Image (tube, rainbow, N blue to C red):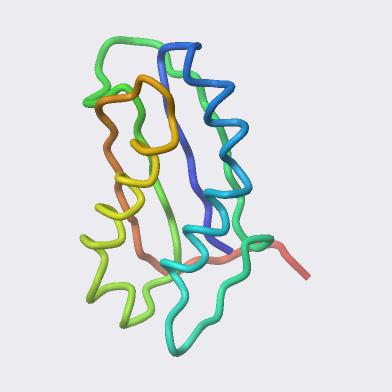
Length: 111
């Protein structure tokens, strides 16, 4: 069950990011789908987190965590670039975003 944490400092991005949540889940599900695993958008959790401090690298930053299927590992940089472009195209007045994809073993409490 992948998660996406979206960090932003400027409150102006909150409404666009909130409105984009379902479309982002569909987009990321497609990007993370591979031969071993067909992912559905309802399996992805998205969290919007307003960040304090001055240490962010971009105006909006996304951390995606998912299991390390071979195809995902092989195309992880392209997945990040594609998600970044998607965010830049859909969030008004956003000129910079960074995306990290953390592929690791996951445990979860889902029954």
